[in-house]
Length: 382
Image 1 (spheres, rainbow, N blue to C red):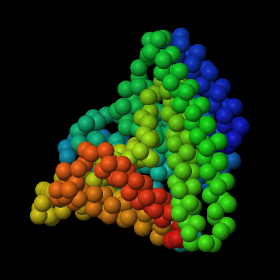
Image 2 (image 1 turned 60 degrees about the horizontal axis):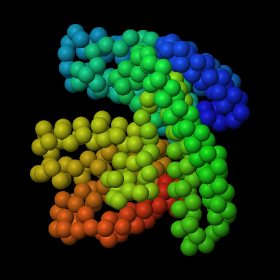
Image 3 (image 1 turned 90 degrees about the vertical axis):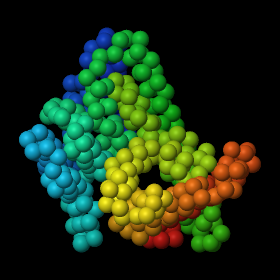
């Protein structure tokens, strides 16, 4: 069984969500039910995968040890930067091993969802360091870490937001309104993934077999459209299922192909990922580099931050030329956009004019589609 794929998964999902809807209608708490079914899905998904199951168990125990250990150290010793960095690195270690070991023909911690589970653990440790999170209980940690709709591919929630939803019991009217929105997202996601993404994949498959260079353009568009409907469809189904379980998981896409510039695109595409990187990598780099006075001005800091932020995002996708180049490409686009918008009088004079916004949108879409072509591995090995 795989998350949001195949009849066995959807049969179990419908049954689980029907029970949740009845409990929600009766104004019962869903917190323990949500945790129980999350563990149950893990058993079904990983049951036949011995190595993945072992790695998942080790990862969960390691993450719990780190979170509870850092919680105690932070309460006792306060903010110690060296200790904090050590715990963040330790929380990233399984993911690093997962990404690096295939290069030497090994496969450590290669289980479904490790990237997204790691984001959750790192976020908790960072916010403990900031003093935003004082304590997290074992059951709360397990519920947040293992929440089944978003285990495999997100969206990436934040622990405080998730646990506020997990603890609440909604009045009947509020729950039924949330449930109806969840059903709509679930059905729309199924259409996205099983109809529209499948259609784009057929076109992409046809173009894949052609060697003419001029077909790279339609291939890039077919691949970009496939990526959107496949991933946005998955995300919608995950968010819709979350709603029915009483958890308002944030949306992951917001009409990205209407973006008017690259910054706008990353505020619309894989939103929870780009905002996670923005909050925990880009912003912290900007603050730290300003404190250390590494750059002469804000613009230089921002440009360097974009390259580092997107370079790490490329590496997160995988240690291969296509993904690394994709990350650096978007870093360059974001840095260039920042310089242009801050320095260009032409931009400041015309940015609100209709003709300029249409032209900016058209240029942005070509840049985005070329980025998808890089990501696909069609012109650079993936």
